[in-house]
Image (cartoon, rainbow, N blue to C red; front, side, top):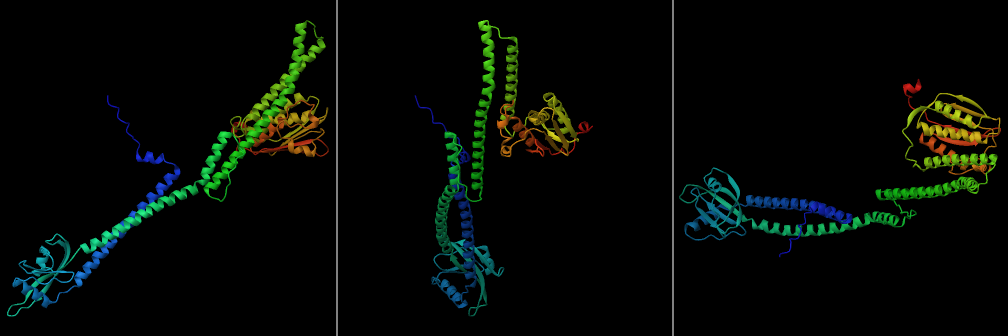
Length: 479
């Protein structure tokens, strides 16, 4: 049983070329481009040189004039049956009106119609190429001569002067071999130079590839590539370094978020677990907890569950990438959303007084996220305001200020107020996760605005939020 035939490689040259490494492709493209250029230059040089040599040969044939006496001697020798002596480097041939030929040279050249026409006086001269009886290509120039013989009337004959084209062919053959050799050396040299240039130029890409492979294998985001110069490779290296730095920072923030979240979740979970265990032990042992204590335990459980729910919601908000917005942006009335947030803040601080001065202002934001941020700002003011104090809220030309009369924030703590899970030492005993102001800063930034906290004159804290206005509020919103 014969073996099955080997599968035929159906890959096209283009597919084979694409499968080569980039360095090889660059070297092949360079060699091909040089080969095409060299071939074009060589062909042009060859044809121009041949045309120049043929022009010089034609000019030499035109300028060659045979002495009429020598022509008469050739005719006399031919009539006597003798062979005339050949001219140095030339074949001289005499043609009369009847086409009779007398040749001085290695081989006769058949007389053409043009040669006979010159002998008959129809043409002044003719220049053409013909083969002699020996098979050689000859360049022939034929012109008319007027001869006078004794006791005869003057006679007009045609005299052809010919030179072999092998003189040009030999020179062109030598030139062709020289051009072929030089072209081959040039193409090989271009390929080698292209390979060297490709290796040198792609060395930064090779380093970049190695760095990416190292990062993929080890997850080491501290890798940096030296970027020198201002070319595309240097820009690519700097972009890669920026990307790895951003990834490293993102991973560090994620690790800190997980660690901080675990720390913050541990306290309410521990308290919740303790309270539930007390309630369960009471049911298991049959020893009833006093009603007052049981109500306190249930209130504590509800408070811890509420704190856990708020903390998980804050974590979900902050875990979303900065580039992803929580929802579609809409043109909303900031004053309208602020009134809704104030109603919720009044419920949390019923003993506080709120003074408001709200001018209409429209922003492009996600309504739910914007209201949550405003509630966090107001809740922060409620939390630190002493009983029966006043919270002042003003909105004018896109600038929202919320001022409380609490203890204020120490100057050395101001740079950290928007950090995740950061809480002032004086606020450790108060409820909260330390994520509220982080969410505020994130939401305001997504609208294109800015937020800052500062110490207010006379005590307390002043929160300043600036929002860019929407180009034009929709008619239904404006109404």
